[in-house]
Structure formats: structure tokens, C-alpha cells
Image (cartoon, rainbow, N blue to C red; front, side):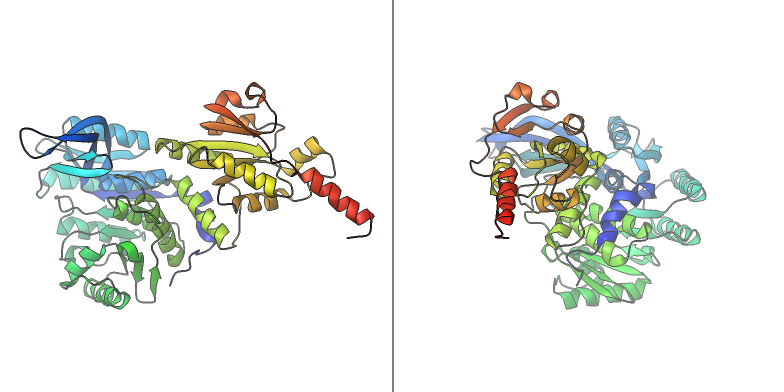
Length: 496
């Protein structure tokens, strides 16, 4: 069993090392389009719901969703595949450019259309899906172009390759074997996200990441999600196809890794599951990033499992972001009593942008919080109830001394941060050394800026960078100064 927290290596890797990785993704490129609307009546023409569309969203799908996950993890990503020469290709290019993906490996075919999946949703319920695609083997000149592109990347230096197979034509038997052999020649890991029952074309790969259904199809047996059955199927596939690591995603049972040396089971982490589409892409991207970054396998599996837990809680195809994954891992470490560190300004700004992109309201407050007491907790709970996420800006020890004198703070800044972060109502803690949090608020740009006491909104520092300012009264009878004075009195009277 993989521990609920694999270790500080994961958070250190995400915080410091992942940005250095160069990873190529090759496979079936797709565009996912979502038509969001509401349903209030049945059509008089046929017994079908009438959906009034109020929003259209286009996102990277198929192999490009793997690339999007890597890009949002802040790896350097190179995308290879084949598209049509059409409007959807133009849209894909724009989306990849926005994500920071190098798409120089996307071959433009005059004889194909860009694969597009269109989904109609009423509320959060998918009502209809339309697929626009042409499948079939690539033309010789397309294969040559892809090989030349990857060969150039390998010569320049890559850390890993992902082959994302959706059985649309790019991942032929010969091409997959060529990619695997090239990866081995350059001593870098090759991960396959498979399709179909025959895995011969994936023989010799370093990682393969089937879901339970795909694993059972390859094994030619009934679906069985018990540990022993999954391990047996994984071992059989590993031996038959000379695969180093078989990683099976098992929905509510989490993930399992099977190789020659160990079997690891990592429990599912999602509390709520809204949409599993794209979760396999997230696992492939995060796992390969960990392996390419030389993380221990148990840590890479744990990180991939946490990432999958984040994306299944979202509606639609959604790539995991480095900062929200880092925050999730830090939160879990905190729960388990492991090492703790605050987020950097860059990390908290990126995390806030991610939350905003998901339509989630951000609340910010700040303070010294020296000797945390019930008044603080009540105040923070009230602040958190104003939105989805509460970020606390915490004065460093130096800034506390400037504000309150040389005898304060009584508690070190990291210890104060650690206690604050343990509160269920606090989503993130970030230190600031300035006399006011204005510069930090400018970075975060919260929806709601909260201040305690008898301030007037126009007096609150940083208000110009927040959507609105709210004043919350402190609880009567509670203050750090009062606690300190009471302790000093008891010491003076010999009661302590």
C-alpha cells in the first residue's frame, strides 16, 4: 500500500524541479467542444429536450489534453500528431499557444479533418455527444514528418515521451515500436496510454497506463476490480509484452502499479466525482513527469493519484495545474503531520488564477496571528464563509517586530503558518515582509478582501486590487495582547 503521503520529495519536485523537464507527446490529436445550456421544455417536434445554449467552451482533447496537463504542470512540452487543414486546426493552435505548448510536431494533412468531439450539456449533465473524425493509417509522408520531428527533439535533449493512443491512426504498430526503441536508445522513459486488446505494438515500453476496462480487454477476461485479480492481469501483461511497469487506474479503488520488484496500491483520493473524462490523460502526464524527474515510483504514483482526484472533481476535460496539485499535496502532508512550508508569492498567484478560471470565489485576509486563539478562529471562519477559498497573508517575524515591538512575535513565523494552515477554513498561507499586504494583494487580486475591527472599507490597504472589501468585527474578550498580559500577571504573582 502506498502511504497517504509519500514524502517531501514530491512537493520539492513540484516546487523546484518539474519546470526543467522536456517531454514529447505523440498521438491522436483532438478538439473537445462543450455547449453549455439549460433545459426547460421538451421539443414539440420530437420527444427530446430543448437546450438553450448560453456558453461555448473549447479545450484540448485526446493526446493534446495530455500535453495540456504537462504544460499546466509547467513542464516544457512538445506535441506531435496529425490534424486537418481547417478551422478546428486553427482553434487547436490558439489553445496550445495559450497553454505554452510547442506544436511544431503537428503535421497538417490535406486529406484529413481535425478530430472534434462536441458535447451538449444541460446544467452539468451531458445530454449528447457528436464525433467528427476520419480514422485510418497515416500516409507515408506524414509518418516521415513525425519521425523527423521526434528525432530532432531527441538530439536536442528530451526527458521523456508519452504515446497517447486513441486508435485514430497515428499510433500504428511500426510507429509505436520505433518510438519505444528511440526512447531506449536515448535512455529516456516511454509511457503508453493504450487502446485495444492487443498490446503487441507497445512491447518493451517503460510504462503502460490502462484503466480497468482496458486492462481486462487486454487480458481477455471479465472485469474484476479486486486487488489480486488486477495484480494477476498486470503481471501477465508485463511478462507477455515485456513491459517494465503496468499502472492500472481503477476508479473508486485508486491505482495499482505492478513491476518485477513490487506491487503498489494507491487508494482513490477524490471526495466528489463529477466527470472522469480526461483523468487517464492526467495520470499519464503526471506519472511520466515524476518518472522523468527521477522520483521514486511510489512518489510518482502517489502524485499521479492525487492529480487524478483533482480533475475528476471538475466538469469536463480539465488539465491539472501545478500549483493546485502542490497545494493539495501540502494539505495532505499537513493532515498527516509531515513537513510544512508556505507557498511562494508566485505559487499563490498562480493558484489564485487557477481558482478564478474555475469560477471559484477567493477571499483574502491578513494578520500576525501570534498565539492563535478562538477569536482568530471565529474571524477566519466568518471570512471563509464569504467565498470558496480563503488565503491568509501572514506577517513575517521581522514585520511583526516593526508593528508590535521587539518582544513580538512570541511564535516563529513558520510555526504560526503551520497552525493557521491546519485550520479547515484556511486554504493557503503565504508570508509577506512588508508593513502592509498591498503588494501581495496585487498579486492575488482576491474577489473579497476581509479586514477585522473597526476599519472603514476606504481605509483598508490593498483595496484597489480586490473586488470588494468586507469588515468583520472581532470577537469581544479575545486578543493576543490580553493572553500575553494574563500570562505575565500570573508569572509575576508566582502562579506560573
